Length: 105
Image (cartoon, rainbow, N blue to C red; front, side):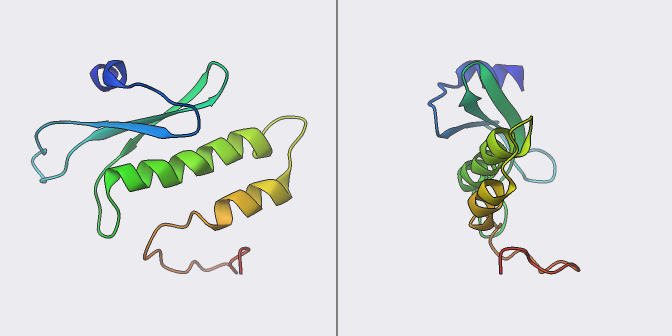
């Protein structure tokens, strides 16, 4: 992962993705995503290609959700309505309905 992080050029408001050149034994590429959240705060997580969504698309969607959570869901100034508004449009393609009611509907 650290070798992938060194290759990245982070741009505020966008996720950066670097993937292994070769797929692993299950024919998937390991990818590292990172996004500048605010100032010197950077989120780093793993992504991969899946049905209906590339690693880059997954990174953009998840990066937006992580940024919204950090900025609106943590700390003394939590803003749940802003967090909910930000993440409601970020559902994974083809995501199944959960057992609880969807708060975005």
